[in-house]
Length: 104
Image (tube, rainbow, N blue to C red):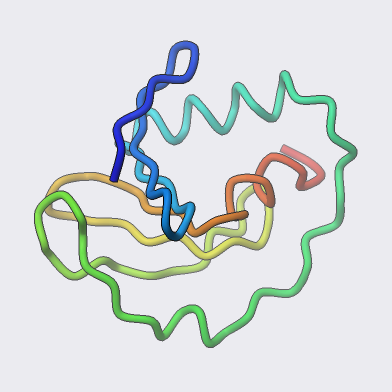
């Protein structure tokens, strides 16, 4: 994971898988900011692939098993959270799904 600073938000990104790691408060702020600022057309969320909910992943920060669940707030995305250190991991493309989803 490489640490990145993008405007006001700090996050880590993996150049191999293109996944992103956020602290939970930063994830919420960055997602809201992007949804308000980015002028991409809103798209209806595609159906979620249920097999993504069965993937075992481990936190790159502390090594604990990540909790994988559906995030249907702004769009159908699968996110991984770590209850031990409070981070959220998004696969490549998941942030775009959330930003481009219709509604709030």
